[in-house]
Length: 211
Image (cartoon, rainbow, N blue to C red; front, top):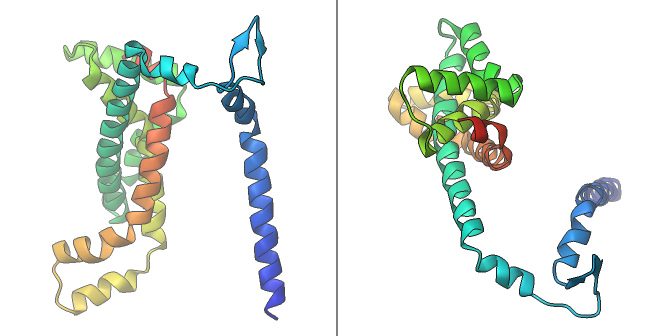
């Protein structure tokens, strides 16, 4: 009775590792070859070196670009997690305008990035906001907001209502229930949404170029 579940668990783990290895296998060769010099287009596998990474560490332009990317990513994560969680709570509360809310949240994500970027560019020009790091953060936040919103909303919809009711029965206020019951139960969803938001922000180039 015990061996069967263990076998299925081991098999599932093995399949997961195999799939992950296949997905990331295209990265293995570039990473490995980065530790060896390249001469005339061919990799010299006999002389390992870290000169490439030393040169990279000394390239101030690349480091500045990386720093800017990280700043944009972190700011985007903070804004999208806060706003996405609040919007998910609003929708879950069955208030008016739920369909319109979902339409507005998902529209920028479902449209091609070039369309979303152009729309944001026109909007920023209309309100007199010059292109800057702020406009990039706003553009990225609008784009990834749907991911955080959907992740948090899914967790809210699967959370047992009895937890909230029990909190009220024990004398907790709405604010105490939110901080001590609802928010801790949303932690996994907010962390997952934050990771996805950062990954999408890190990879997004079209909106960055336009705004």
